[in-house]
Amino acid sequence: MGLNRRPDGLLLDFGGVIVETRKRPTGPREVAIHLHRMLARGGHELDPAALERTFLAGQQALKHWKHASSRRPAPREMSHREVVGEFLLADLPDGARELVIAEASELLAMVSVTMSDHIVRPGIPELLAFCRAEGIGVGVVSNAHAGLSHRRILAERGLADLVDVQVYSDEVGVRKPNPRMIEIAADALGLDPRRTWYVGDTMDRDVAAGRRAGVGAVLLTRSKHTDHPPFDIAERPDVILDDPRGLLDALRAASRGPALASVAPREEGRPALLIDHGGVISSTVPTPAAVEDLARDIARRLGRIHDDAPTAEALLRAMAGAREQHRSAKRELAARYRAGRIDDLPEQTAQQFWARVDALLGGRHTSWLLAEADDLMARYAQAKTVRSLRPGVAELFRACRAAGMTVVVVSNTVSGRTVRAECARHGLADLVAAYVCSDEIGVRKPSPAIFREALAIAQADPHRTWFLGDKPLNDAEGARAVGIAHRVLVRGGSTADEDLDRALTDGSATRVVDSPAHLIDLIDRIAPAI
Image 1 (cartoon, rainbow, N blue to C red):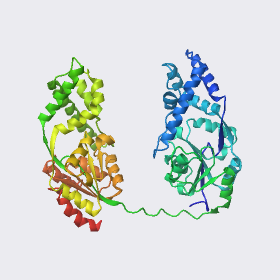
Image 2: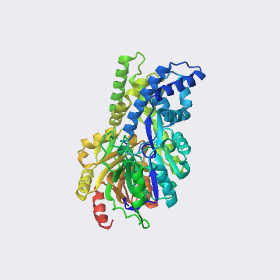
Image 3: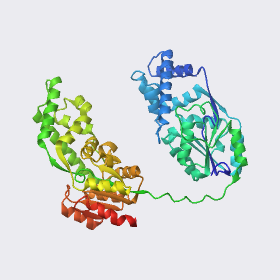
Image 4: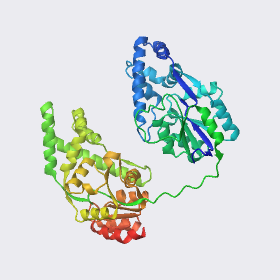
């Protein structure tokens, strides 16, 4: 839309746009005195000077967190209790810290107005009055640890009635540059973000958020932050104004625009191959002797530092017991998923597995197993089976490369590290774009999230995408749930042939093949039509 068309909505940051904030030299001392009195009422006598030092240290740490959060694509906002208890006053003694956490919301509102004066910037009253007269919706979109104080300031200055909606990060749970804040404000006004202007004062938070939300124009009113972003920002505003008076001039100069055109159809996504690992890329044979070697090594390492270290035999029994508990949990989760009682199936973490092992051993080595859990899980995954590359897989991957189809491995696994290592050992690493592994994303197939991440990586159109797996529920039904059109199951994996044929009959699978290589001909035949 740009600046030549008048917007239907104007979304304004608070600090740096509506108000200018000026630090009060006495602010830290006043906050410390307030804290001293608050804590004294609870029986905690702390030195005001020490409270001032800890508060200033917390403010500095919080500033670094804010800058770091601005680098994230969609940062969340901390709760009031987190801001106070983990940053501003994190090192108070027990009891005192719990007291300030309990009073966090009002405490942060007090800090906001005590640390800074808030002066309405030139042109703001006239700008808001113009928008009201012209029927332009107005929203405030601001990162704030105390949206309550901003609401009070607008009310005290007589501006609240000229604002149609106020969106503060501490109240909605996300913070700029997360575009969700702008989307919430636009939706609250009944507007498409493309027919709004967003006005901020920072490059890293405001310009980035506006561009990600797809607003019609991004404007900045210059403040002390505008020319000093914490890191380089690729996005640029449409214009930088000295103050909000220039914004009013821009609105007056803009012509009234026509009705918003429909969204242009997005360019069609690419075809891709998403493929399971175990039973599909590789076939496996159990190797109990290697698991016994691992148990002996764990027993040896624990024996060097603990007199009550378990024997290798005890470790083997505990590992087998923990594995059976995991299998039982998977069966229960699958049943709940089929019944529609849950949308996602959580994956067991390495720490959870070895905590089960520890519990079965009597709970005597919790810290050691926790610290070593990730590495032990990778070693356990490698020890359980020996894997061999299934015939036709390398040829399939090379055919996909030649056809411009991205290959993404999508695996339920206790160790994504092991999946990558095995594919590299088979010479496939250069043919695979990425691995989406359940232990790393936190959910198992058939959870939609694991498939959606793979589709996003490949920038793939589900209607042109193939999924090759060996399990009707995890692979075929999971792929169908996210709209993947071509769902192929391969024989020779972990599923009986009659169950694969049943999946074909009920429509969860679209093909059943004998070898991964057979997918090459299928893709070649169907590709021209998709």
